[in-house]
Structures are given as C-alpha cells and as structure tokens.
Image 1 (tube, rainbow, N blue to C red):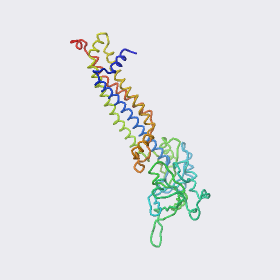
Image 2 (cartoon, one colour; image 1 turned 30 degrees about the vertical axis):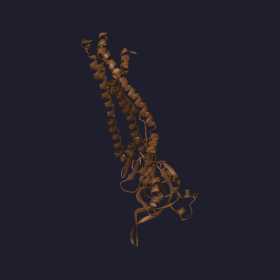
Image 3 (cartoon, one colour; image 1 turned 120 degrees about the vertical axis):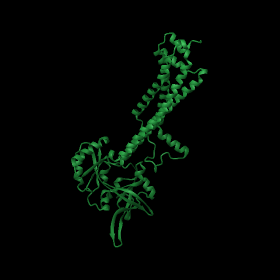
Image 4 (cartoon, rainbow, N blue to C red; image 1 turned 135 degrees about the horizontal axis):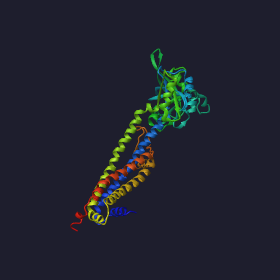
Length: 425
C-alpha cells in the first residue's frame, strides 16, 4: 500500500475537532448511495415496463399485419402460401377485425371483435392465461363433451377477457348477445344485427386494455356475422426475430406488391415506445442530479480537509513529497468516498430491483392501496428488468464524477507553499 493511500485512509477517520468534516463526508457517501440506488431501481422498473408492455402487446397481436388497400381479402390462402416463402416468417393466420357491442341483460359495452382460426391462431398470437374454458371450444365439434344442453349447445362460441366478464356479469357457458354495426332491413326500418353467442373461454392477458375490451370468435362465425362470405380483413404474421420485423415486412411488401399493405409492430406502436424511451432518458438525467449534489459535497469536504491539514501538507513537502503525491492523497480520499457510496448503492439497488414485486405487494397490504390500479395503467403489477448495460453506465459515470470532483481540492493542496504554512509554527 502506497503512503498516499495510507494517509488518505487516516484522514477519513475523524478526530474530535474534525467531526463537522466527517459529517459532510458521511452526507456525501449517503448522497452517492441514494443516487446510485435510485438510478438502478428506477431504470430497472422502466426497463421492466417497456419489456413487459412489449411482450403483452406482441402476445395478443402479431409481429406483422398484412391487409389490402381494396378492403376485404378474399384469396387469403394463396397469399398465406406466398408469405410463408419469405425468410424469417414462422407462421401466419387470417383474421377479421371489427367493432361491436356485447350485451348481457341490461349491461352493454363496446368491444373489439376479432375473428380467428382456432387451429392456426395460437401459432401467431397468445391469449395469455385461460382462466376458464379453452380456445378449442370456438369450434362447435370440440364442445360435444361440455355440460351444455338445449339451445345453448347450438350457439357459436365467444372468448372474452376477465375484466369484460366481470363488467358484464358473465360466467363460463353463459349466453351473451353481440350487437353488430351491420344493419338488417325489417318492415319497421333498419335495425342492428343481433346474434347470441355462448361464452366458452375467459382469458387473462395481464393487460387491462385487452382484458376489458377484446373478444374472440371463430373466423367462420365472424364471416357470417359481418356478411363477409369467404373474405377476411387480413393476415397476421409471426417472425423469428421481432427486431427484424421491419425488414421482413419490406420483403413481404416487395414480394406481393399492390394492393397489399404491410405494417409491423414497431410502426404500429412507435409513439408508445418512443415515449417510454424518452421518459427513461429524462428520469436518468433527473436522478443523476442526486449524484452531482453528492459530488459537490465531496468537493466541500476535501477543501475543508485541505484547510485543516495545511501544516501536515507543508511537513510532507519539506520531507520530499512531490505535488503529484499530494494530489494523489486527496484524489484517493475522494475516490474512496465515491466507491463506498457506489458499492453500497449498487447492492441496495440490485436487492430492491430484484425483489420489487414482493416489496410493492407488501407496501400495498401494509397501507391498503393499489400502486398500479389496472383500470388506470396498462399493467397491474410492478415489473422490473435489470439491464447490466445501464448499471455499468451508472457505476462508471458516478466514479468518474467523483474523480472529477477531487481535482480542484487536490490541485489546491499541491500548490501549498510550505514556508507560508509553517511561518507562525
């Protein structure tokens, strides 16, 4: 151990007349500790939000959507064969998209109605956890063994989200009516088309927007309801690498040409994920101010130590210590303060980040409130994903700030004139 480091460690140990300096040093350590821990926790939560949101959006939606400028797509089987030849495409499935009203007694609400092919859809999308029922029950021949008799057994099936089921008071195998925007001519004028369905599944995606406003029926039932004959709205496509979806979409567009229109998930959710990334950067800048405040405390504490140790510095210089050695003494002292704060903040931040869900659940039970109400936020749980690249930037950046904060006080100490310091001794 060099004598500069030994002297730095000795100066960190407080004497009775240096209590005030030690208090400022402790505040500096606490400031760096809080800044590093807060940065790690906040960035982990925001990364978790982005990752969880992306996973849930891509679970319920395909990576690429193929539609036609001319409206409904009729020859979709041949189009799917063409799409399957594109490199990077894993699977594809036809879909019908429409909006309707779902009614149960006096309760009625608007829903996004999606017609899917039960045998193909799960290769492209994921409905999340099925709380009750199964997607297979959308096919009538798969419901023969179910405890449903009478007219209800002949009703087409519908799968709804758990929040939608709760809002309408619907349970598994109960009937509900879909009010279609398509109208029917009657002797009394045009009226909306109303068709009864039976609830054959209730899903839980963990995404309130989907659980409260999304319903699935079979492709055939959707075609009958919307009078689309054998046409579909478009084709949903799943790819191997979600981050290459834009390149694959361009290739599909080039292969099929007009009148097909291709969109990928990054394009459809661009504003949402851009806002999340911007917010993450802003939070990083704001929380970095905590570290900067702690760095100013390091500067002030080192200046006070230099003023206190004028005589010691003068004696060291008369014994042959160089200006560089004197600078190293105080640089080491500032770096030790910074490293202690960084290490303790890193440990605390990682502990909280890895256990954020358990901690948030405990706080909710203790104070009796919900941190993330599902009807307000996109997610109902507090996610966390530790990004080690972010942690490396935080640790290296904080140590660099601490190092820079030691330069002026240590330079001032190195310029001390021994004769002036020892004149009155």
